[in-house]
Length: 199
Picture 1 (cartoon, rainbow, N blue to C red):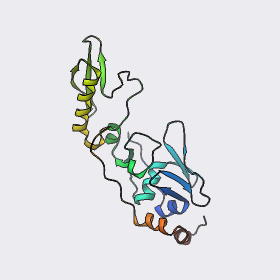
Picture 2: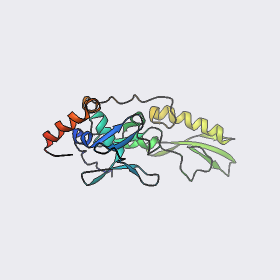
Picture 3: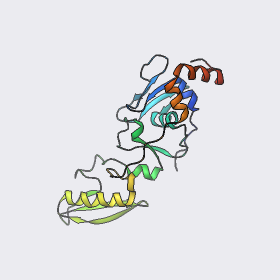
Picture 4: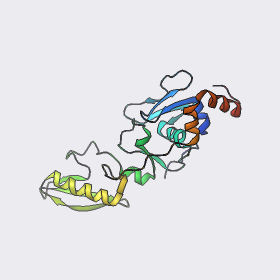
C-alpha cells in the first residue's frame, strides 16, 4: 500500500522561516543564515519545521512552486538524493520515480538492466513493465546488452528513464517565492502579521 503524504505547511510560513537558493539547492534559516537541512548517510536530506522532520525536497518544492504535490513524489532527476537544486526536482508518480533508479549495488555487470546468464554464456538485457520482467535479448558483451536495455528504457519511460536525453522543463517560481527574494524583510513582517507569530 502506498504511503500517504501529510499535507505540507503553508508556503508563506516556509518562506518566512527559510531561505532557499534554487541554484545550489541549499536551505538556510532566514533568521541567522545557518544551514537548516541535514543529510543522514546517503539518504534524503531532511528539514525540521514546527517540530516535525520533513523530506527537504518536498518542502523545497512547496517553497519554490507553491504547490503541495500531495500523493505525487518529488523525483531527483540525477538520482542524487542530496542534490536539491530546483532544476533537479520534478513531480512523479511512484512508478515514474522507480523508473529513474540507480544501478543496484548487487549488479556486478556495471549496467542497469543487464545480467550475465552463465548457462548461455551471454549477457541478458531486460526491463520492467507493469511490474513484470521483459526480456530484451541476449548479447555477447555487457556493453551491447546495456545499449539495448537503455534504448528500451528510453522508449518505454521517456523522460523518467535514467540517462534519458529528454529533459523535464524546469519548474516555474511562484509569485510569492519571487516576492520573498525581492523583499525578504517586508514579506516576513507580512507573514508574521497574517499568521500572528514571530520569527
